[in-house]
Amino acid sequence: MTGFGGRFVSTIGLMPVSIPVAENATLTTAPTYTRDIRKTTLPNGLLVLTERMPHFRSVSMGVWIDSGSRDESPEVNGIAHFIEHMVFKGTTTRSAQQLAREVDSIGGNLDAFTGKETVCFNIKVLDENVPAALDLLTDLVLHPTFAPDDLAREQGVILEEIKMDEDNPDYLVHELFTQNFWKGDALGRPILGTTKTVSSFDQQIVFNEYARRFTPPNMVFSAAGNLDHDDFVAQVAQAFSSLSASSSSKIARSTAPRTFPHITLKNKKSLEQVQFCLAVPSLEVAHPDRFAVHLLNSILGGGMSSRLFQSIREERGLAYSIYSETNPFRDTGSLAVYAGCAVDKTREVLDLTLAEFSRMKTDLVSEEELKRVKDQSKGNLVLGLESSSSRMSNLARQQMYFGQFFSVDDLTTEIDQVKREDIQRLAQELLQSDGMALTLLGNLGGLKIERSDLAC
Image (cartoon, rainbow, N blue to C red; front, side):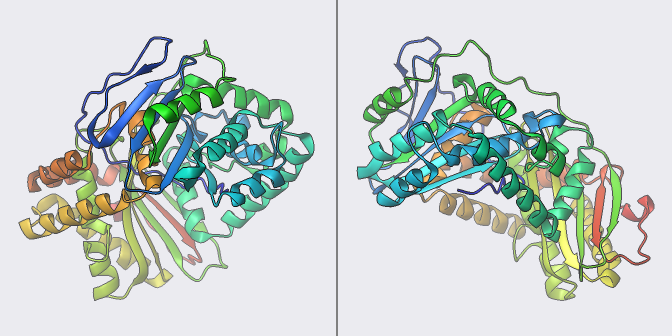
């Protein structure tokens, strides 16, 4: 079990392919679709998704909560991550030790994570052990005890986890950027919470938040591997029969947060390097231009052949780590460049990064470069879906963000349709100096950066 709560989840989707969803209260199954994907709504409202992969011997299944740390009030910041930890501490029928022993006895891999917008509890087993794995996962999710003694111990564990992350410069620069970029919004608050909020959690707070989130309208059960949809749905229906149909609706979503251009310089003398983050507002998950911005990012800093890697690391040796990434959410996003460099090289790294921003805006990328990043993206996409675990995750995320499913062929077709002009247009729209945020962390000495230094 991990409570890593990865900073962001990147989701690539396509033009939607419509799939009907049952809306009545009876057991209803949609027809079979591409790649043997099927979905059924149980009488209590729980949505079950499967992808049959008969050439596999494994089955991965996950209970997804369509709610993460950005759905928390400031007073309980970190509660989603805390609940994710606490469900592993024992149920009404199994102790934490029994859970661990039973998972090991079937050779399974039981895990969990918390993100900004989702929480997932998942297990991967051999196909012959699906009933036992389903029983374990169901018990874990539906019957936690949240015993006060366990709660107190886990508070100590998470407080140490917070300290550990604060000692990690890469993590810390990301958190500093996020907190200032989405200042005052839940999206900017840390997934782990703070020492103050985590220390305040008691059993009643945990039960209240658990009851608010773990309801059929806010849950998706996905599975992929060597399974039969109808048989699996029957097993899930029995396992989740104790989960009553809820009169509550999905958790209310906040409006899209405002982004704040800023320059944050945080001195930390113990660091040998300056941690560097330069970012601009970007597109939400389901934006029509999401494939173009993905390719823009790949050209800019998405791999060893990217412009930033070649210019800053290979040609000049200014940094060991230099990359860019897109961080899309349901209603906002960011495009950020990260690097670690010596303090006396920081301004040169900044200038070179801004020069690449400017070149993306003024010059069309070559056909050769565009073809390379398209082939890279398609290869990464296909290779990334060659496991039952990744297919299970892909099913749930597409359902939660799009309500529809996309085949690999759909995705590669959309990637191929991106033109050079699309990338230049997006660069001109997104890479604007007045929207930029810069975060520097390290032994900065007398280093000063002004807003005028970010012109590109």
